[in-house]
Image (tube, rainbow, N blue to C red):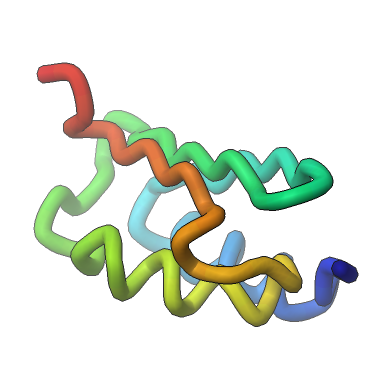
Length: 76
C-alpha cells in the first residue's frame, strides 16, 4: 500500500477551491478520511460518498470499501 502524494495534493487543492479541507489517516488495512467544510463551502460541490471513495482508493492505495469517509453533513 502506497499513497500517491502528488495525486493526494491535487485532490486537496480541488477541495480547497470549494472551501473544504481533506484530512487523511492511512492505516494498515484502510484509511480514515474526513472532509471538513469551511465557512464558504459549497454544500452541493461534494460528490456522493461512494464516488469519493472510488476516487480516493487508487490515490491512497487501498480498496474503496476500506475507506471510512466522514462528510461535513454527517451527524447533523
